[in-house]
Every structure is written in structure tokens, then in C-alpha cells.
Amino acid sequence: MHWQNSAKKFLRQHKSRIFKVSIVGAVFVAIYGIIFQFSTPFQNYLGKSESAFYQSESKPKPDIVRAVVIENKGKKIKVRVLDGQKRGLTTELNYLSSEPKVGDQIIISTDSRGNLSKYMYSYWRIPGLVAILLAFILIVLLVIGRRGVHSLAGLFISVGIIAFGLIPAIVNGANAFWACMISSMIIAGLSIIVAHGWRWRSLVSLVSIYAILMIVVLLSMIGGALGNLTGIYDESSALLQISNSVIDLRGVLIGGIVIATLGVLDDIVTAQTAVIDELHKAQPKLSISKLIKHGYSVGSEHVIALVNTLALAYIGASLPIVLSISSNINSYISPLMIFNTEFIAQEIVRTLISSIALVLAVPISTTVAAYLIKNQKTMLKKLNFLKIK
Figure 1 (tube, rainbow, N blue to C red):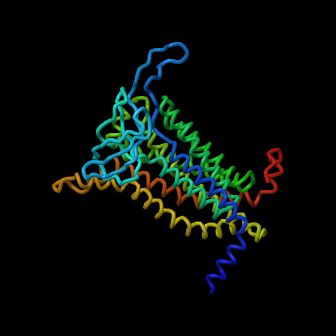
Figure 2: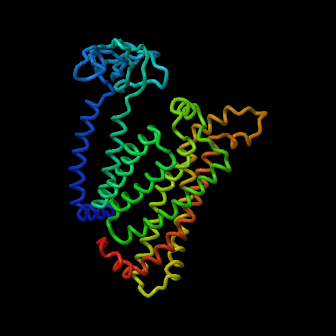
Figure 3: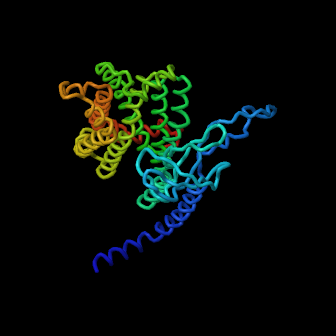
């Protein structure tokens, strides 16, 4: 009975939020249905001309179409094509990876004449990825409410800057290191302000983040030099270097460490700033040294958990490659050779530098926040033109 009463109380308290999220959820289900039905990698190259306006000559190209598995025949699968001129056609395919199930959507490559390959190319994963994304957005809105919208906006801004700014810039020959630095600064500024609002606490967090990022840049350069890291650690990165020699993979490596660290810095710095701000509001007479002492006490507990979380996140993400490297090391070769590989060395440097930055983030953000929040009134008068809350 107790849990039933608690559930009823929760529903009464959050009735409005649950109703709004339910409406959003229904919209998301409709969006997912549309994406599942109509999203496709098919480009319909057949009959398209290379140049617009005047050139009528067409140059057919290879393409990719979707298909749905309608029968599994052991070593082969029977599928129905969903796109292109062969739409509705049923055919049998061989598969090389995991065994597809009936109902799975897969993709098949075609030649320049539209003829289907005899092999399954891959699974069609976009609808599944969209489903996970929509579920994430829905849970954020349900748990956080209105502030979740600001948080999601900050996330999408960060992803947008990387996808439409950073990556095209590097691919087109921009200096990878500086492109990553500028992107990091913009992401930090926009995501903090959008997520937390235009207020003094947000600007204090930004000052701390920018200061720590400078330290991360310096540490990344030192770590890259000490580890003799080139940024080329597997066939994919080597192929990228050959196919696009203008990309500085070492700059990409250092910039990647900075961007990865930024994501965790946002958490710890904003938390420390909030702690100092709340302490100051609760006890305005506390001196700067007292604020630093109490804030550091809270932050040190936080950073202990974060360092472990960061290390586990990197290890988990790189586990398949670590296992692949380990399985290919011969028994007569020293185990130290595993750690000596470029990939493992890179992950060690990345983890240690990010961890150092997190540890330093506590005293730096606590000190900056204590000083700036304690002197908030004086500074806001000087910065009155900025209309900071």
C-alpha cells in the first residue's frame, strides 16, 4: 500500500509534466514511424546528369538500396527490395556477418546499371539510432522538465559545431589543432550559456573552463611529445593520412583530447561554481578562504568518482581494439609491447591528461568561483552594460 500511495502522490505532483511528455512521446513515435518507413540511403543515381541546367548526358553510378528480410534459409536470406527500380523484387542473398532475422532491414549495394549485389552489404541502422536518440530526449524532458530543453539545446549546439564546423574545416585543410581549439572555446561558451542561462554563475564557470582548457592544451602537447604520438595508430588513420595528407593527425589527436576533456569539465566546473554560489548565499559572511575550503571538500569527493568513471569510459570504448592487439601479440614478445603500441599509448595519454585536468579543475574552479562570487556586486557594477543576472 505504501508504494501505491507514493506512486499516486508522484502522479499528482507531476501530472502536468507527465501529460506534456506523453504528448511529446506520441509525436516522437510518429516521427520514428516516418523515419523507419521513408529514410533510405538510396540516391537514385540512374538517369541523373553530372551537371545541372544544360548537360543531358547521364553517368550512372553505384548505389545502395534497402531491403527487408522475409525468410532465413540458413546460409542465405530471402529479402524484398524497398527502393529503386527493383522495388518489390524478392531475391536471395548471402551474408558474411551475423545472421539476420526475419523483419530486419538491411542494405544492398548495386552496380552502375542498378543490378543488385549477391551479398548483404550491412544492416540499415538509422531507424534504430533515431529511436535511441528520441528515447534519450524523452527521458531528459521527463526527468529534468523545462530545464531539460536548455540542456538538450546545448548538446545539439555542441554536436552541430563539430559536425558542420570542425569536421568540414579539418577535411578542407584547416589546421586541426587550432580548429579544435576554436571549436572547444565556442562549444564551451554557447553550451554553458544556453544550458544555464546568461547569469553571473555561468560566466564564472566559463572563466574556469577556459583557464583549465589552456592547461589541457599544454599537457596534451607535452604528452604527445613524451609519448612520441603521431595520431596514426591503425589502418583507418593510416589510410586517412595517405588519402588526405593535408590533415595533421597529431593535431587531431591533441584537439580530440581537449574536446573530450571539455565534456567532463562542464560537469565538475558548473557543480563547483554552484556549490560556492549556494554557500555564499547561505552564509554571506564567509571569507574567500572559507568558501574555498568548504567548496574543495565537496569537490574532492566528486572528482574521485569522475576520474574512475573517465578511465572506465575510455577503457570500455577501446576494449575491442585492445583485445585485438593483445590476441596478436606473440607469447615470446614482452607484454610491455602491448602498452608500447601507438593506440594503447594514445589512450593512456588521453586518460591521464583528462584525469589531471579533472583533478586540477577542483582547486582552480573553486578558487575562481570563490573570488568572483564574493566580489560579484562590485564586478556586476563594472559590467553593467552586459545585463548579467
